[in-house]
Length: 123
Image: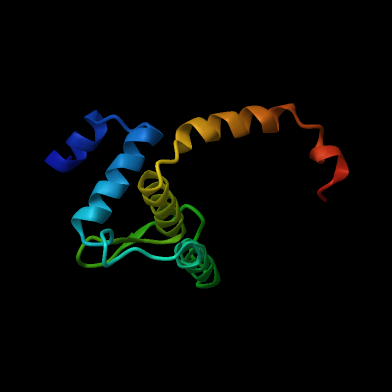
């Protein structure tokens, strides 16, 4: 186990902290600031593009839980693309001061109270 891996294990990996870390990393790499602010539709499109990349991995016959690595160590595969979706969402939420952890808890609690198949609204 590398020193970086040990640091990650010992970190606070709550949604709130991951949200802050995603934003700080994005900021550090120049994706935020006066000259880099994107329109909401563009941000949503970028989130969706990561889902499309996950689907491409599936179409290329990769297993759902398969992660493979490029020579530089970059992880690829469906799990990696899904992680990219979440990272983009975390970054956006932090930039807009959305408490994603709190609303996830509220939404899950509400969903648990809904009837089976939401009263047949969904098939």
